[in-house]
Structure formats: structure tokens, C-alpha cells
Image (cartoon, rainbow, N blue to C red; front, side, top):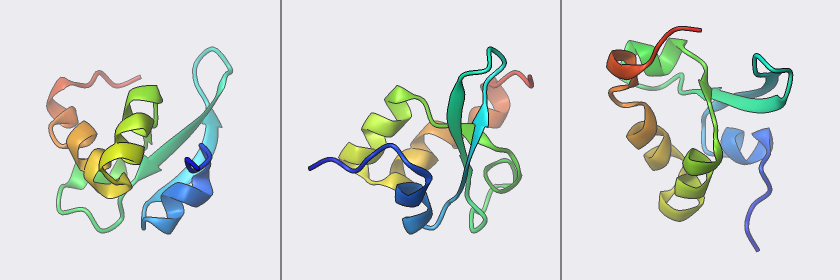
Length: 79
């Protein structure tokens, strides 16, 4: 059985996770890694979209978080 899309699943992997809302008001989960070597992974909250979640279930939560945010500070646009 696949883990449920929840902050509990992400927190169990050592990430900080919380529910918030996107700019359209839809609920989303955002995460950051307090133990990351890179500042943007420690300080910025990153949305867990469907692709990131699927990769987390396939490759592992922390591994997928790193893959999706490793160079995100270069390519992301602040909201």
C-alpha cells in the first residue's frame, strides 16, 4: 500500500513539512530539509507536487527531495 500524501510521511523521513495554500487557495504540502548542506534546501519551503511525490514514493523521500531541489535556487522564480 502506498503511503498517503501527508506531512506525517515526509516528517518521518526527517524533513520539515506543513500544509499551506497555493496562490489560488488550493491546499498543498511544502517541505524543507533542516539538515541539508545547501542553504536554499534548509531555508526555502518547496511545494510537493505530484511529480515530486511520485518520485518520493519510487526513489525515497529524501533522495527525491534532493533531486527536485538541488539546483532549484538557480531555476526557480520567487513568488
